[in-house]
Length: 306
Ligand code: RIB
Image (cartoon, rainbow, N blue to C red; front, side, top):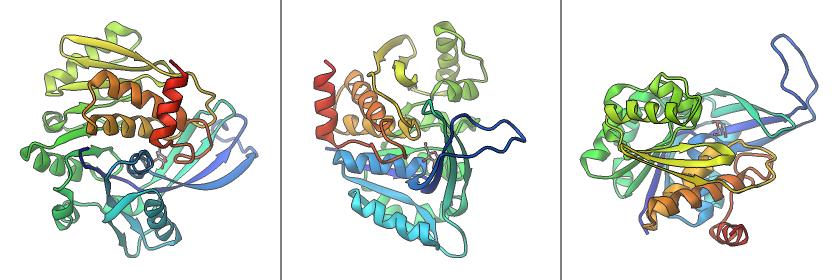
């Protein structure tokens, strides 16, 4: 199985559950509060670790209690952490998350130490980074670092997966380095600068990215599943029905599942089916990483849903 590396963010998630989200200017009472490890990068790494992958995390935490706790979380979940340093005099990344009674969320991220993952840091970790074969990126560390690192890795023929989240416009030179980009609908709209209301819009948006150099788009569609889109090909892979409690990190879990199956040498349809299962299962408990499944749990789930 190929070796994986996640280069991205580690956040501590401060999660409150609420009936409905407050309107601007409104104060409401929450039902509960809990702290969970999160961050798009670390979520993907932990999901991979739980599946049993050989995975390295590259990123930074702050010199606070959250940073120290996070190093334990990585260790306990089978994630190699020689790519994670503690940055002095800055907080760890945090995310303030509200989850409503439909399992939907809204999130405010404070970057903290994630903002210090710069090009020099990548250089200092290059010897460990370069040993991996498949790389997962998201957009919670500086964009300059993402572009620089992807270019270096692509020059070496590595496989690159970008989860373009949180939604953000991307510099044009990044697209040619990406093998698989995995936007949800909002992210695809942002990248293509086009409103998507139906499948025709989706294909047109996809073509805008192909013109920029993207090779394959895995279009995440929540509970409906995902589509594999190539220049002249479109295949939809249905999602699985689950009782969602909290969709935080469903996309991260999807990406981890996709990368895991890819590292096993599975064909794309199988990778997306496996990703749909991992993403779906991950929504069944509160907290980004709480319900991320082991490989055995995913297999059993997929067999039962046949
Ligand atoms: O993708 C979910 C993650 O987004 C949360 O864990 C939170 O930390 C934010 O980064």
